[in-house]
Length: 131
Image (cartoon, rainbow, N blue to C red; front, side, top):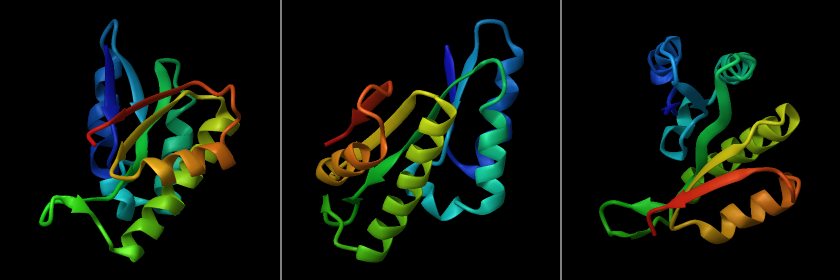
């Protein structure tokens, strides 16, 4: 079983489940929580990656789905923020040699572009999407 913490406010709660036998963790910042990204959150995540039972970085990625129009969001400011946060998480996961758990929705081209540019080709990745 892998518990996932993907928002700054949920990291500690999700990590508490690591105390149980057979429970492992993956931690990152989900694209819809990209505004959570700060230096202290990055430092906390890097520290969490050193725990024995943490097996991956994520869930992170890009989510351009607009709930109001049910189409791809055209909010360039939000897209740029998500891209910046995702790119940094890719770099950290690669540096720490942690598999990457990727969320992508209505953003497949940008997701692939960032992964191709910033992630070694042989780096382990789990991708899921809702598109």
